[in-house]
Amino acid sequence: MKVKFWGVRGSIPTPGPSTVKYGGNTTCIEVRTDDNDLIILDAGTGIFPMAMTLFPELPITCHLFISHTHWDHIQGLPFFIPSFIPGNTLRIHGAYDPIDRRDIREILSGQLQYCYFPVREAELKARLEYVTLKERQVAQAGSATVTNILMNHPVLCFGYRIECNGKSVFFTGDHEQLYNIYGPDDPEYHEYEQYMTQKNQAIVEFIRGVDVLIADTSYTVEDYPAKKGWGHSTYDANIAMARAAGVRQVFFTHHEPTRGDAALEKVFQDAMDRHPRQPGDPEFALAREGLVFEL
Amino acid sequence: MGYSAKKLIRLVDGMPAFPPSVYRILQLTSDINCEPKDLVRVIDHDPVLTLKLLQLVNSPYFGLSRQIGSIRQAVVFVGINTIKNLVLTIAPMEMLSRQGTDNRWMENLLAHAIGVGVIAKHLARRCGISEVEATDYFVAGLLHDIGKMALHRFKPEDYKDALRLAKKKGLPLLEAEREIFGVDHAQVGAMLGDKWCLPVELVVSMEKHHDWNPNLSLLQDCVYAANLMAKRLRVGNSGNDTPEHLPRELEQRFGAKIEELVGTLGDLSGEMNFTQILIHP
Ligand SMILES: [Zn+2]
Ligand SMILES: [Zn+2]
Image 1 (cartoon, protein in one colour):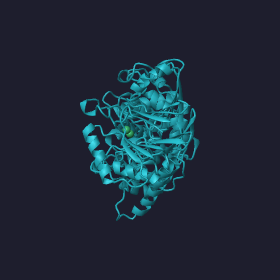
Image 2 (image 1 turned 180 degrees about the vertical axis):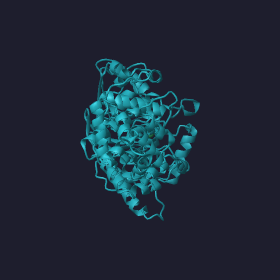
Image 3 (image 1 turned 120 degrees about the vertical axis):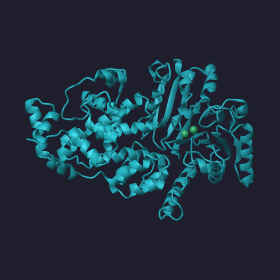
Image 4 (image 1 turned 90 degrees about the vertical axis):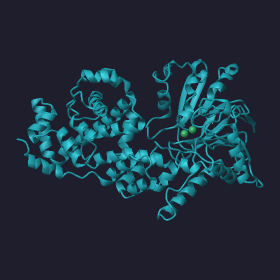
């Protein structure tokens, strides 16, 4: 399997001189199986440059998995060129939104309303298929299987685990480390801790042993107190999660839009210094636009 | 005929209080920085609300892979924001279902109320209202006929007379209500809204949902239009379904005639079914 990053930025695209190295596009990850099946994780603005590389392969079947429908994870979808060309198949997977009461098809075709975008869904020439997933439902994507688990974000957000020929990748989507809404003096504190342990264990078990973990790491420990409840994790929380799950390689992604290349490398190094290498530790790295990782 | 003013006031006074938990939740969630634990405490002390929330979280709409057994567990597993939004939808529904849904007529009326809520929210989105505010439109639509429910609940025999009278004489239901009670359900709804200290905009929307004028707010316009659209679509039954047109100014406001507006709604059944679970889990 092969993983390629096309968008590693959180929340909003940030082109400009200070992000040349790591890139300014929002979340999009290309995963290729050994049989060259194409799996795309999220459709942020990074999906546009990725789509431009697909022409030699057309017609193509794309298995797109949407973690959640916040803008930065779907904004590139209307510009996914293969969907305009007959003969291609785009199979889009995602969760039902119980608050908005719309499934993945309704939400995404809402994006193609004429007031937002000049092409209507009916005018897309590729074959579009929508799959509304339940938690832990298994989806087949060519020779790979993809399963999901609910993460912690202001809207329902799936983390996806992709498996093929004994190799595996897990992508958290957007995820905030769990925190106790009660103080230690509140009578409900311990009960809440127990549920948190349950949920944390469920996530760690789900990720257990993956070759690659791609994790939303928007914040530093210093950033976090002011951003609690916004739905994103810290380096430190992800280091702990990766250690607990025994993964081999970690990529930190969803970089804070205000953090330029130099600042990003500095906060990464600080986190590494705070958590000196232990035996059995995974490799840690910053996700960077254009980076390819073979596993 | 007709009730004396005194008798009417006594009638409204005898009607149920707005559940304090619901009121508290509306208050808490209007503050974007509200403490999650305060919200959870209010829900926790209301067994009906707790039950509804758990039923929903465990429904196929969430598609969770495990059973959720308590509110706190639900907060951990689906997140505080989702719970908060869910409770915001459930709370006003609770208000209605506590009026009782013990017969066909009430069920139809309830379906109508839900339909108006759902459509009012669609209209709000169409007018560029944010998702957060659109919830207010849903609530306003949901509550618009609360006066009808209350009259039917507390004076069922008299209300049946009003229904019969409307049918026999071919009167609008509103007029038949006035003959029997001396007031109509729009006025009773507004009286209840006052008694419950609901926001003025909501109270006026209940009062004016049959009596449009150009000075109403966007929310009131949306509820007015949604009511007529629900009747056209025959979503539920409000007891009065002669098709009506929108006033010219409203056609201009929404940029379409009522037939076209109805056409933009798409399939509401999913949304309707979801909301129905809140009442009949
Ligand atoms: Zn994001
Ligand atoms: Zn997000």
